[in-house]
Image 1 (cartoon, helix red, strand yellow):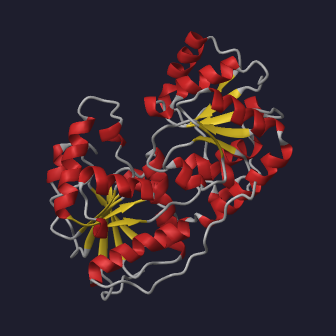
Image 2: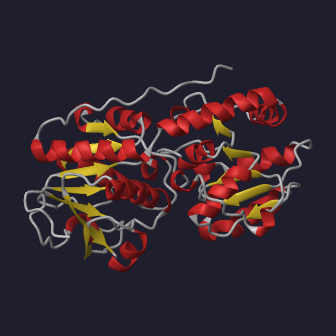
Length: 380
């Protein structure tokens, strides 16, 4: 298809398209643009082989090679060689090139590299990039109000240039009608589910210790999204002496993951720090109740549609889980509220918000205001 010359060109940093949270975010936004083309052309920059695998079918976009390591001075300071006049440079993460001559629109998904660094040097890189964004970005986008407030109050960002886009229910939204089966180790079984990478802020140790102390909860705990860190979680479970069966799931495609959510008795999401927390909405979208920490942004995402516990009072986890498992009426209230919450948090809405920010960058004016429905809270 020949691109109309009248359309401006948006360049996108797509180097992280295969990564868990950011990759899902970018792929789902691009999928919506494939179905409802935006008023601009797209050029995606990254590893062309990977982009050909992960870029949604039907997206009208040019793919160009530019693949420096994500956290590197080369990525930050050496821009790609653009083949077109670029109206704006968009990145779904802040570890992008800050030396692009075109206006920069950048997503800050979270500030965990600064607030909860897991590796030496992460805090330095985070501070460097955030400082560059303050100086260079036309707009900074966030998925939650929680991160927006962090950028304003902790890092001094101008509120007028920090825009909140929200996010949709992970990868499951497109597979809710799928009949895919769960992995063989889960067939015909009841189980609790936990999804996330293996990092301290995910609170894995807390989760395993609480389950180990609840003698009346004998359900196995199935764990997904650990990547190569499954052995570390198994070692932690052995150290704790976990009595519950621990099931480490291999990498799952979106249809399998949707099936795993749907069959789970509950999603346990004890994380104490997030930028968003896609598993919360993924589980809600499949009709599975969720237990989260009573902290932002988890509370913001769930908006009253999840069971909660207070991380500073560990026994509240036990109480909340017992209500979830044993109080059928309350459980049903939260299941229905979660389904409605996931429905309102659509990828279509997120894609439109990003499109609006990019068009505002290009034209200097606000697009026509879109009216979105207000969310609801459970009545219990």
